[in-house]
Amino acid sequence: MYELDDDKICNDKYWVTLTENTHIKSSGEAAKILKRLESDGVLPKMQNHEWARLCIAFCFAKTKNIKDWEQKPSMDGGLEIASFNTCFNQNGKKGEEKFWLAYISQRMFDEAPEREFTKKHLFAYIQLAWHNGAKLLDGRYRKALEYCDGSIVEAKKIFFDELAGLAAQHRESGSDSAAQAVSGSLHSPNPVSDGIDLKSSPAANREMGEKIVAALQGMGKGVKAITFLGQGVRYDSYLVQFADYADWDKLYDRFCSAMGIPKDSSTVRTEQYAGLPHAHEIKILRHENTWHKLEKTDFESALKQYRGDFLIPCCIGADENGKAVFADLYEAPHILVGGTTRMGKSVLVSSIMKSLFELNRQDSFEAAIFDPAANYSVFKTAPNLWQGEIHGERSRFLSLLENLVDEMNERLALLREHDAEKIQHLPEEYRPKLLIILLEELAALLDTDKNAEKPIIQMLQEGAKTGIHMILVTQEPNSQTFSSKLLANLPSRIALRVVKPGSSRMILGEGGAEYLTSKGDHLVKWNGSAARFLHGYNV
Image (tube, rainbow, N blue to C red; front, side):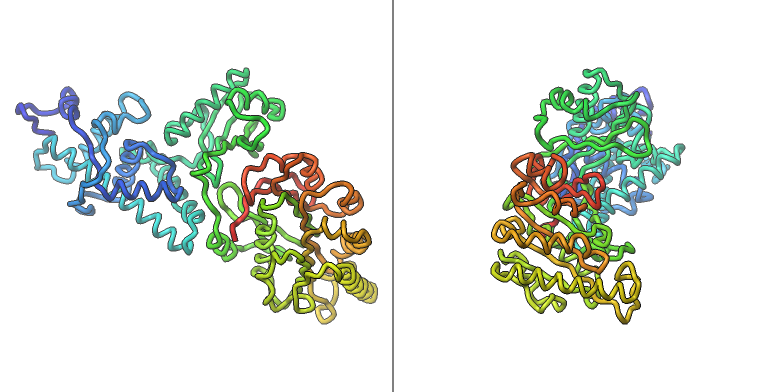
């Protein structure tokens, strides 16, 4: 019970009297924490009342009573919410504020059952819960950041997973009021429910989700469910389950028109969602100033976390969630990398080579690097360089290729001698090292010397079984430079942004690379698989 100014006892008839004409203010530290978490991309842009509810719910979920709280925070520079109802009327849903009042009050009464509380006590309690919840959230993120060696992307994933797990845990408990508070304020990891599940989403994503539904329904496509999946490196993801079969390729142009999005861009990316009928994941590009950068520290952290069993593991980029994607060069078995100048080819190839050096035993392979542009000088001190150096003289290009073919022929003879199909089948004492060949500026080199194509094709055709794998790097190719025979022996392709659709088809075997939005973004077809969109690391 509360003691009111007119000596009346506050019960459910007087809740308006208790909550009206009072602002809620956060501590200055809570305001700074929100700004820091938004700046790191850990949280989306949040309105003050959304931030308050999240902090208060987290505080109640993680602490038993006020004795666990910091008691006297500074209010200078704090955020302000106009009223109790503005703070707790969740997503405009009437009645939520009454639930919050009941729950908060019960917490207070249980902590001091003999005490008489006033309106002043209630709002002081809310302010303290807001402050302490913010500090707890900040502490959780900092701990994750420390655990991930400073990788914001990995720390963010741990942070989100904890919040989602907490929400799910409390949602399952059902009978506990705290459970309901938390599950109503934290994003649920459950991807789909039967209906429009946007209530716990940030305001901007809630609006975008509603816009998506309106656009699809305006096209005559029924939407069974939509869920905001979360914020990725550059895209916000929404899971849409249609009421019946939907051919997205036929819907795409009309959808872009209805959304006011150019159809010749990467503003919208989609893919079918496995395990759910008639479901697609729709990704909407955010404004550039909200993009997350994948820096060298993120890359180094990702390599440390590799736990696969590939024969020749390498990192080929990161997915939209910022998670490193590893592939087996043995399965490739050769790669063509192409794209327009200054779109990040060399940086991407450097990260692939770096991962090969880091994830494979140094005594298990050699790297033959031909680099007339001096893009890979960072590897000049590597102990396992073929012939002990990086080769850059164009005049020696053909003779070097011929030397490599000679090496391959010796390995083929060794296989025949031991009646072995592949290098892996040779007795260990006779088994030569893997040889990874990196050829930079391939198109320019082939233009300079047409005879160079023959030894390259020879190694593409027979090199893999001898432990020789090639990474061919080029700017936008054309049919005059790259023969169909050469391309036919390159089942693994990586395309960065190109200017012309024809260049995308030349590199990738299909269009799409002309729509890539940013430096480092790329499409990967690994050994003939479907094209996959990935981000590059800035290494």
